[in-house]
Amino acid sequence: MTPARALLLENIHSDAAWNLKDAGWDVERLDRALGEDELVERLDGVQLLGLRSNTTVTARVLESAPDLLAIGAFCIGTNQIDLGAAAERGVAVFNAPFSNTRSVVELALSEIIALTRRLTVKDRDMHAGRWDKSAVGSHEVRGRRLGIVGYGNIGSQLSVLAEALGMSVLFYDSADKLALGNARRCGSLDELLAESDVVTLHVDGRVSNSSLFGGEQFARMRPGSVFLNLSRGFVVDHAALRRHVESGHISGAAVDVFPVEPKRAGEEFVSELRGLPNVILTPHVGGSTEEAQQDIGHFVSGKLRDYAAEGNTSLSVNLPPVALPRAGGHRLLHLHLNTPGVLASVTSILAQHGINIEGQLLATRGTLGYVVTDVGSTELDGLLDDLRAMPETVRLRVLP
Figure: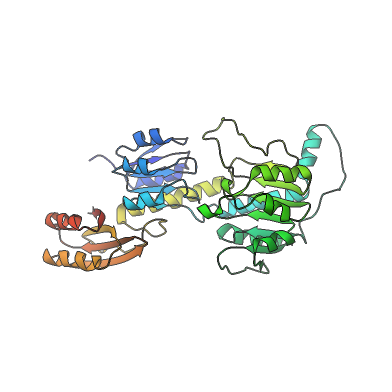
């Protein structure tokens, strides 16, 4: 029997490949992203796809990959995947919402300190042969006010560590979030901008965050303040940031994400922010530490493996979450349109075929429902035909 196939792109950590190989998967690894046409070609016969942020999975890609069961985003963001189209085809999508948060936080803290001390300027002068011990413009972070926009897994962890350094923390989030330590919630973004010495963005990739931060927001920041963006490239107007750095209103900035990023190493990086003083530019490496990539490799490959073997959708970003312990026998995985009476119809069909239910669990999410049923019978042919014939059925899968 030919092993099921998995394709891992963008130099995903080798532990992910070993994790899947140990479960019997035939794994192909590539160290680069794929464009749409090449991805369509490569996905022929592939059941599991792993990628990072530079590979885009469109509806066309999904339509051309009927064997695809699940996609693993070996990163936090999933905006590179058409989640709706994946759900419509019964393709589960998993990401790594926690594994690299510490790496991002540590990068943000190091950049806050470097920019506040103007280490980038001192470093440039030294490499140019200039010795300047002046303390002008250099400050301690202790006692300064840090404004965090987006108080999720990264923002809240940054809040705790920044307080440990002696910073006062303010945060703004569109959702109600519990303040940790002595952090203070601001009622509006404008309030945070007016009071913060350092502003750092840690928002998610939802469409409503596009162009969140532009000239108006930079103008409302305190003169001489510092700005960081380690969230999404499309959130910030980089031309406006350049103007405010050049005018001196913003004394320093650190940017790790960009609206358009090179697809592979060696391509030219183009940005309005190149060449600015006291500006740190990094190539989308917030979560790129060996520790984080290894953790992500373990976590996401484990989710893919468990979904393929057990049908568990816990922490899927697009399918209803179900995690049912295996009761033995066959497992029926029925993804369907979320309309009243589907569970009753499934149960009725099982009863008509004289099949006893050993375990069953249903969850819904938006327009979809997902029912996992364990049965002891080995005669399923007529049953499977009847379940697939249900008008609400999106995808039916059977595990031995």
